[in-house]
Amino acid sequence: MAFQLNDLNYSKDSKERMPWEHYLEQFQKADPREIAERLSIPYDEEKKAFTLKFLGTVYEITYPDFQVSHHPDEMGYYPLEEMIYGKILTMRFLLSGAVSSGTGKYKTYREMPWGEVYLRQFDGRCIKRLAFSYGNRIEDFRAILSHIHGIPLEHGDAAYEVEIYPGYRIQMILWEGDEEFPPSSQILFSDNFPVSFQAEDMAVMGDVLIGSLKAWGKVVQSK
Image (cartoon, rainbow, N blue to C red; front, side, top):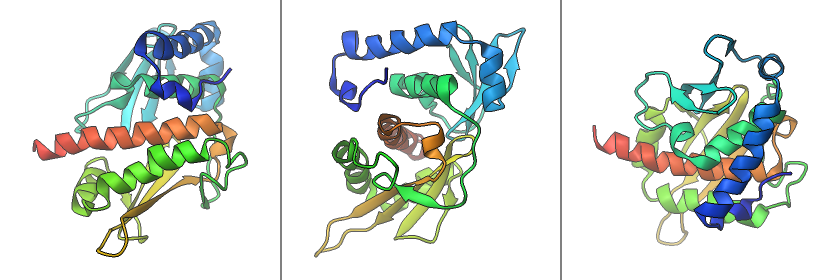
């Protein structure tokens, strides 16, 4: 059973709780040693906690209750502690993900094996949202991505690469708007994403990433 992108629109008392409880039950039945071995991530038997890097921050995730805490760093905002869908996404990765590295090629959402699934939602909630949020604020975008140690790329008017989970990399590209054309954007995924993620995972992933950029922007502004 996979939670749907439509779930992003429902009320907290049902549409967050139901997928959370569903995947937490699966997580609690899983073998933590199998998870650690399959993903090549540390699992501390004494602390009963996994160590996992997510968007530049190292987190500890306890088993079986999935309590999340970050290792000290300068990020100032921690999506795995704050965003329920970031937690559900990570729980799904722990349950069914695999170690993988891309070939160096990057693909659009449409170019993935299930590219037409949720394409309209992904375009609206991720591509257009990124362009609308930062297409006329290129310097803010650069400041935020520099803050989270994104890798600058030679694409568009501004572009950066981030690693969301170990081995799984995302590129965000912006083209600035002008009098004739509105701002536009593109989000590319390393070509190994289908190894561990389904269509709805990647749509939610984009939503979590762009929501986190907004929060990190407040951190940058406060400095």
